[in-house]
Length: 207
Ligand SMILES: [Zn+2]
Image (cartoon, protein in one colour):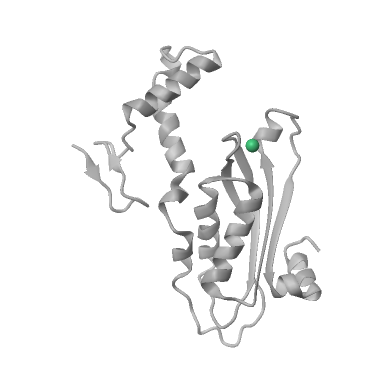
């Protein structure tokens, strides 16, 4: 019996073990890829790989099924006059590059200067995950997270700095393990005012 889960992040047809049902043509496509890569998809070790691979990719791309801005819908205005930077530092994340489908692994620091409204601090990490669980380039991930906070909280400023390693660079191509790429997106006061920017970067440990 197929059941539709309502506690999952989006409605997905699940099998009797609660696992996502993988359509046959998706499994076939993965077998084709395995064969083309040089292996035998019929050997024992690979027999369940197409299903596992497909389900893993559904998870990596779970962000398509959500609107990350919804995490910021519930705000608190009782901030007792707090008018300093709110910073969530070094949040780990994994994404995948849209060019090679290779992992992008890194950390993000997300800050905003509130204008009367704040959100639960874990919500910033949820916004990050909502965009990271899609096919990305690091530059766009950085600006989407910043823009989402800017649009939904209408703060005085937003600063997002992401440092990440790209599997397509470390594991193939020029093979340069350990090299991190840094991107940043500043909006509002952090864009316009050099001393605010300096302050937030110092808080992030990037001063
Ligand atoms: Zn890539």
